[in-house]
Length: 197
Ligand SMILES: Nc1nc2c(ncn2[C@@H]2O[C@H](COP(=O)(O)OP(=O)(O)O[C@H]3O[C@H](CO)[C@@H](O)[C@H](O)[C@@H]3O)[C@@H](O)[C@H]2O)c(=O)[nH]1
Ligand SMILES: [Mg+2]
Image (tube, rainbow, N blue to C red; front, side, top):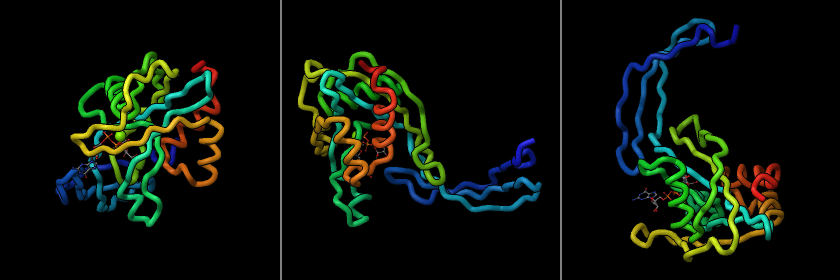
């Protein structure tokens, strides 16, 4: 018997509060709690679409490929806002693997050969529907077929970095890498890098 055996949820009402880049909805739900009592709750949800991210690891050099770009939400924290992340992008209706191959190429110029699906994770489940698909691939210098840098028509302005894995981990500890998906993939690399050699 789990705590939530009596719990259930009924959606009573949904209203679009904002319909810009991301739709924001206000919900009223009848939440029956673990004691069997029903309460009407208000919750707001960002309808983020699925996305994917990838660890590009060069086993010969023990380096990872990271991207640096401007992120407005970080700027609003008064922090340095050109932050370092693993390559990532929205699926835009494609299968996750197709999408991550496309994003890796657009952002870094690396053509990904074999790709390994790792896991899916909700990036912020209390407020956002975003579900991130995590991948890893081994690359070497010959797989770099263009400069990457992102799509000019979307005003993407991306710097491509090739960083020793040990240095990237030190950058997490020093706060120089502060993006959750990136930290997850770097830690996966420390635990599992022999799978990519
Ligand atoms: N017009 C408009 N464009 C936007 C907005 N927000 C982002 N864009 C543009 O939308 C494109 C999204 O690029 P992707 O590479 O597909 O996505 P991403 O921004 O890298 O997203 C990834 O990282 C995010 C931050 O960690 C994640 O939130 C996201 O799910 C994904 O993993 C970029 O050209 C970006 O400038 C907006 O509010 N308005
Ligand atoms: Mg991106």
